Length: 268
Image (cartoon, rainbow, N blue to C red):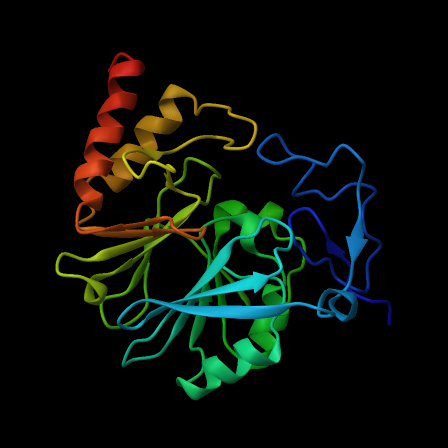
């Protein structure tokens, strides 16, 4: 069998039994980009040389997993510990021994869930290792390049897991973009946002856009649909896709202020 090739720009793994496209379908989309020096591919064997997973505690029962040195989009995966079962929110491409041992020592995984397709990466590898389902909103099925046996597509506005944890469909950045709502991680609840909501470097603004790297705004109607789905969420804390994208205690206030900027700019 051929190797499962991985796009070096976004980290998405393609199935080994199919020819990879000339350009990564995830990157050759207006939300992302193909680098100026062209399309490049790697594989898991090459990727694991010289790289490892750095694990950090974000708060009680929430951990960050990040590949170092950086690979692809340099995002982090978030590991949620919960009595009913643990959840991995978004993925990093390399499931190395450090990450596997850490997760197993903390009870394994009951599910993997996603904010959007940029972080699918090597989700089939992770799901096979931990023998758990992968939950993806049906609206993003066309960007699911590698539909392994663990993939479960779901429909609707939310998908309830356990212990009050639920995946909430928001739309916006992608048609199936979601957030994970975990009520137990903070006093008023915590949102794991991925890139569905993007926390600014200043930590004084939260963005929602069609494309962040290409700076393309959402059409007005798509923002309205997104806002209607998210405005009622109860939370005080938010963790985004990248290191230091942590808003603790005042996240809903910043969300409200940020969304009203959008409302004013759209003339609503």
